[in-house]
Length: 455
Image (tube, rainbow, N blue to C red; front, side, top):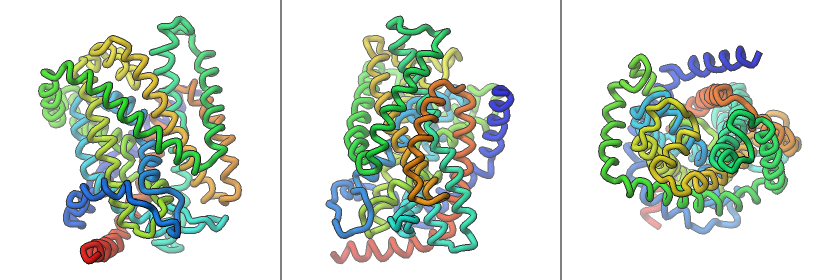
């Protein structure tokens, strides 16, 4: 039964992530870039300064610019950057990283549009509170006849933000890097350990989740920057000690992107799709989840929030994912085929930096992964609130903790296929709404920058 379900989910993910979706994400991003006359690139530097701008207490919303970006990044940084990159290289070879870069570069423009719209078309939930996200953008911006598309996103978002992938990989890294070497469990018989760890993680999620969004924002605003710096320092040490191999690794990424020789069967299309697929999981540009976090920003300026959101793909894909990819490629473990997911990344660090890197990586990844799990709870609860009413969304935390436990013992292949399928489905309404409402963003951007020059 489980094998048949796993096979079905793999086939569904492969079907959904065909060329039409690739054209929608990458082609849509290119359209946004050209339609805006390269605006996201021209104002990328200014977006950094906006992070530290004081919020106006009279503005609607719940989070500062910095907290909104941290909450959005906590949903992308973590397993997407550590495990997702490893999966991309294992499936598509080093060339998949090049297509992750391409997706990130166009994703900068995509995020500018989707997150500007998330503030521009905020709507009130059934409790009367202001909310943002693709479902509200569709409802408020496109009108009643498009409302089924809003519900479509909410259902896909509810399933796509389940914590099973993050928890699955988090349990795996703690088990393989700490528990097995310490003799707490064995590599062959670890079900009971995984289950107990899943119960502990579920208790932690419940503790933070009861505090809802303000507590989540405080946790991620502290946790995300700290852990990103810690992870980058770890990768910097590894790469600096092997600096002579970095140019060759970068060259391999660029050449393999077009030859596809590292892929079984040498199918170039697989390399491209794999890279874009994993980039979507990494930075979520065009998927729509990040718009829910930025839509909660305390601001009346949609364009300002769109500019802050542009930093997401730069930080999580162009910087953090690249560091992970270089470590994996330089180590050579990706050619052995013995590991996948987060274990492949951990093995790469052990090969290049054997002195405690496994434990350090486990700690950093654990904290990043938990921040992602907490943020996904917020996303899922907002989707559920849109579907059945905000007054009931607080009950989602009890469903969510059960999913945390299930994720700790689930099959990796099944988990990846399920999440990939839901991400593909979320992208359809998100990109459709953004493309239709792009003229509204351009008009607002023109007014905003004209006013900024006269202030």
